[in-house]
Image (cartoon, rainbow, N blue to C red; front, side):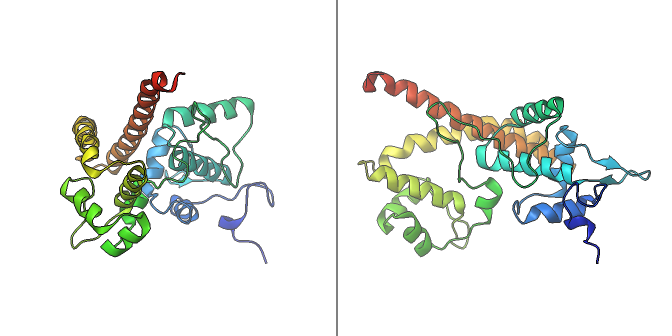
Length: 251
């Protein structure tokens, strides 16, 4: 029996089988549950993948295209790399006649101290899909009830009606629990909330015009812009703190 076209890797049995955008989405959804057709179209518009077109204009993807998409999505999710950096890496591969590994991307962004930024962190889509009740949040974060209540009073942790917490609430709660081990109290963290609100105001001015458009590609671009702004903000904050601590550490 012949193997179904959509499950056969590139290079097996001659010419590459071609898939529709819906079939590609099904291939990617297991590892990237928040990917959408709009996202795939956006990545094409950004020049990161170039599917073939039928005479009627329908997109047709080969396994090399799927490999590129996996590379892009993994680099975004795990390393928070901006599309500009990913595009440059892919362009270099194209110039060298190389290609990303079919099974899993190999690009790793290493920080100045050898860390891999974003390793293990949830994407915004994944964070929004997490649902924890209050008891689960306390148990998984290591906070006690009184500290969680103080964080809510300060606006550092926010629940969704009727009292569910998402993945970002868990990340915040765990970070606060870690800082508490060094003597930090919730009242010391008000500046974080204030700084975050200022950034939200700045970033919203950039992404809101795109997010308000009815075009799915524009909304996908808004989400991508927001993701890159957050990643750049994290890098800037970490670098500024490192610079500020150098004199204290005698470096």
